[in-house]
Length: 225
Image (tube, rainbow, N blue to C red):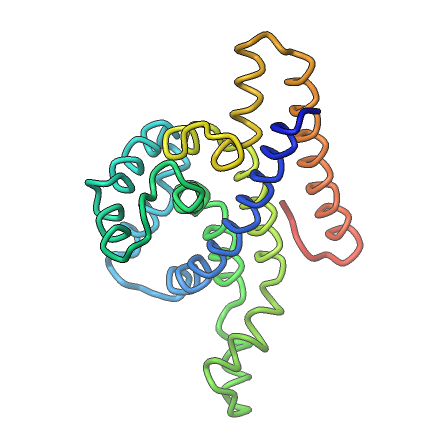
């Protein structure tokens, strides 16, 4: 494996890890609101969250590129704050990946929160637990299956991104070149051996993650994927 391929693998793992953390921070309150609210706009928000499931990645990447570019809304804000250009940067990749993988984190969390029912929270309230205490001591432990599912799906989905990251980040070695793009480059130049190696690494990594989750489910009844 070449040095560029190793770098692409490290960039991919870093991107997946940071994206999952960002999605948990964003997705946890969003999923809680969706699971508890009866607001008339709930359906609209759910449709917007699920949009990446049906929207072609290249289309999402194109509009994200416009938004993150120098003349886009996020690009202008970044420039005003002295943050530089978001398009064709690792930060831009994280933003794009967060949008693209949002439903893979929000939906498992929303389902886990909704399945809890109101009884555990009512019992905690009678013991004078504050809303914050109830969330961290009751909701989170009981919804651990949803959290594990969200983390696994969010991480695994980010590993295999291609269209979105290519549109937003381009193909800059050491900065925005991820494994999926490196594989495409190898295939284009007929370097099938290197493409096989990187593809095999992703295959083994993804399978190992899922295997670990199923093992935990079998032993502790924690999660179902």
